[in-house]
Amino acid sequence: MATVTNWIDHLNKPADQVAGAVYPGAGSSEGLLVILAIILWVGWHVLTSRSESDELERLARKRHGANDHKSNITDW
Amino acid sequence: MTDQLAALTTIFTEFYYWVTVVLMFLIHVGFCMYEVGASRYKHHQHTLMKNTMLIPLVTVTWFLFGWWIYWAFPTGPGLAPSIMNESSALITDDSAFSSKFYVATSQLMAVNLGDHISGVFWAAFLLFSWTAASIVSGAIIERITTFAFGILAIAIGSVFWVIDAAWGWHFDGWMLKLLGYHDAYASGVIHAIAGGFALGVLMVLGPRIGKFSSSGEPRNIGPRNPWLVTIGLFLIYTGFWGFYAACNIPIFDLGPEYGMEGISYWTATNIYVTPTTLSGITFNFLMSLSGGLLAGYWIAKGDPFWTYSSGLAGIICASAGNDLYHPIQAMIIGMIGVVISYKLHYWVERKFKIDDAVGAVAVHGYAGFIGLVICGFVLNGYPASGYSVGAMWDGTTYASINPLGQFLGALIMFVVLGLIPGYVIAKVLHGMGKLRIPREVEIAGLDYEIMETAKSDEKAVASATR
Image (spheres, rainbow over the protein chains, first blue to last red):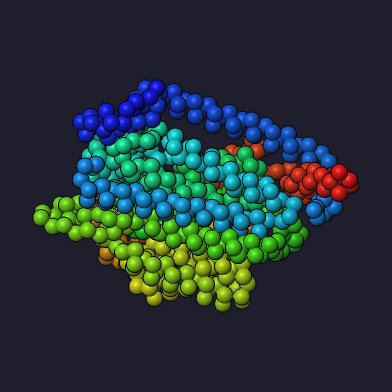
């Protein structure tokens, strides 16, 4: 995965080869990383949307009044 | 880099944008404080988290496709040819500044020893995106679901404002060429569009419970913590300095850029690559802030919420032309924008029952729109670009700044790319039953369970003996 294994050797290369990407997997892994990011991003939306809906439904069923929260104000 | 002067210029530019990003982060801190201060106790935590989570949501999408849109869409597509490749299609070829360099899989979108600018420039624009989404966030507090807000934040932050930036802010944008559009510090490109988008969402979302009486009279739901609102707005002012700096290119040789043989002219430029100075825009930033505060204090009869917001509105209104205005022009324009925005806010509230919880539509949308229109008159005749000056509708050259072009530009920003998409997306989310929280939850408070748990924790700790 390492793109650079020796900085002295790397900086001694011709200028066009020195100036370039140096992250692990440069030139071979970008597509895979983007797909992974998309999966994580979509997955996050699905999971959090479900949990938010559950939370809102649960709270709605309890039918608290507009001032009920005042008895829950903490004073540590 | 092997040449020291080139290295200094490059690394200065890299550091310059990096600093603007850090400063602009304060805008988001300010928006978070402001919204929490404006919301009621029982909604605080959800209000804060909603605005916080737009950071990752917009950032990831900005990386995946937002930045690409900016470089691909200056031509419309199909409206005016690019000066880079003379084509009206999306710019995806091998020409300089093509979007192909900014797809998520590009090696320039990462640590690259050959590119010191892409990351910091990407981040500066990303912070603009957060701002656009945050403007919408404040207007809709206490009744929208976090899921819906996330989708709306991505839409405004990574799609619609970027399209308008490609059209009206990019040096190759079709609005500069056809309309002579000028918006140096984003009266329209950020503020009018975000305000219009927020208004579109509010039209579907509806008011908070209790905002209007049964006879339709609006009730004031004032900020719960005015001091948090105050500090939040001061932080937004502070971040705005970074915003202004980020809209400039700090050092550029315009001679070769404009094709002038043998002439070298080093200067800072605005986003359109025409000369300005940080010094000059500092005059105008402070004078327009002052104009806004003066007018806001007067019109709102000393109300702190509106006075602080008016300072911001003053800057926003003058921003379109603050690269060229005289400071006193900037101050007067800021004053005019504030008075009209304030009056319009209450008229729209009464007439259409729009509950804009923090006045975001007025401060950003109306002030931005008015600022664009005024700019068309005050800067009438200035070139919209340094490259080549032509007539309106020409398309191959750049039109001069003019009132009609600015008015049409303001409509494109506020209505076409702001209000309509906001309304349509909110309608879709509403149709899915995902837009608004249940009525019972709104009454009880989004934070009810969190507060209940905290109270039990407090009781448990208070009764503990060891």
